[in-house]
Length: 125
Picture: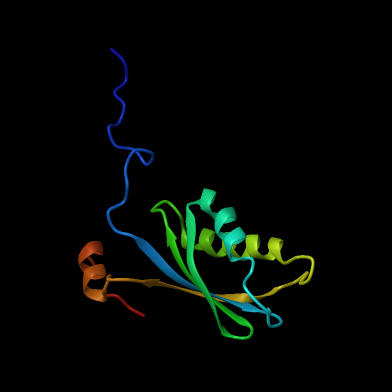
């Protein structure tokens, strides 16, 4: 008798709730435009990260709307987006970014939903 194989795996299932994040990165100097956005989206897609939108909040602050697959950690999102973007602008900005960033979940998930999903009586923060 052969070993049973799982019916449901990451490759043949789709997550029913989109995982969406707001990522803010801080440039050392103001960037003139975001002509690199399409290349960034193509470069991060194989990692399970999909940048949906970008805009400059201030001249040296980039804000991204990002969707990820369930297996992608938040640390990986930050590493890949900043790393791939640094690679795209490396000729004109050898050290493009400051070390700080901000990442937040966005969408319909509320604190009460999070408590219910996690089974936690109290969240701090």
